[in-house]
Length: 244
Image (cartoon, rainbow, N blue to C red; front, side, top):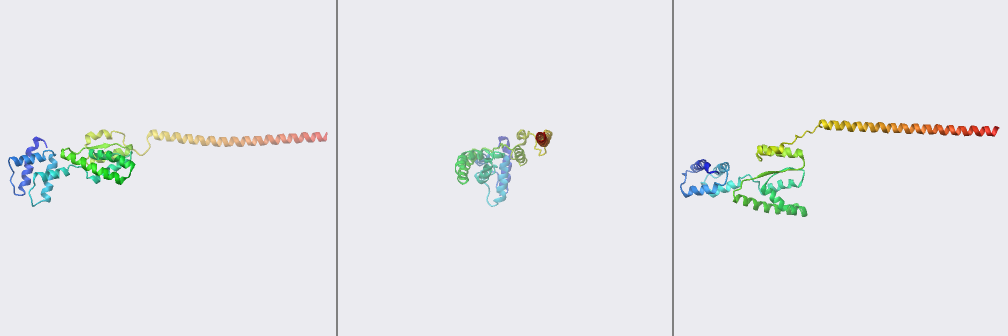
């Protein structure tokens, strides 16, 4: 939260405590509330208070309890979900939307995945991811989602647009990733021209093949006729010689 949002935070805190019949505290208690929660976005803090009041109607909230809820509501996937996301990165054609911690944990376990099996790699990933997320939350680092582009252009556009629609990626900064030509499953004008050229070449080749066959037939026929002529000539001369 920003210092300029302190008044809004105090209002949220006052309303939450009032639902338990508690007044807004003063002095060091207010300082404790602010120091525990100042590292989180105001929207997350508000949501954490609402969730706590809905689920815990008996005891008033304390700074550490709301801070714990804020940590778990930062948008980072749990370890198993992160592992499932990371596995999709094995396919170089796939575009992946993942957190910094997911990508770093996957890079740590990648050698195990390549040299051993998915079970061993999963254990390595879960341990690394849990540690990285704990460190990020301890330092109040907000979630960072980014895109790892695959080679499949159509899949890129589909995944990125879905992430924008679901609020995982900011639309303005992600627009450049969608700047490429939209996928069109039908052939382009250039594609049509190429297909026509190929069909023409195939037809020409077929015609040439048929012409070659006809030429061979004609040559064979001429050779046969010439053979017959020579044979008849030899027979004629032989008969003339014998009757002379």
